[in-house]
Image (spheres, one colour):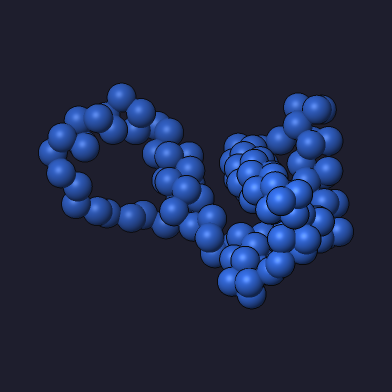
Amino acid sequence: MTTLTIEIPEDLAHRLQPVQDQMIEILEFGLQAVTPLQQKPYLDMIDFLASGPEPDELATLQASPALQERIAELLDKNRTGELTTQEAAELDRYEQLDYLMTLVKARARRLLDN
């Protein structure tokens, strides 16, 4: 394990004091929260949206087979109670991405109906 020394504001130090034994998990969650756009599913979505898809392409968009398989794996682990903290955060990000794309697809279908 590596030792890391950082300087933080006094008020943050006081807030972290009660949870100092959970610092590794806190840092992991924080890192995951600031880096989701660097993960492949997000990059794929950004590239797709940047390409200027037509409403029919948006309405019929599906996750890649590899992503569908990964999500199924995470859901299975969640059902059996074998999901790690990191995997739970990953699954949460996929759920957020799915919700966003559901909204985009609904708007695209509305455009197609008009």
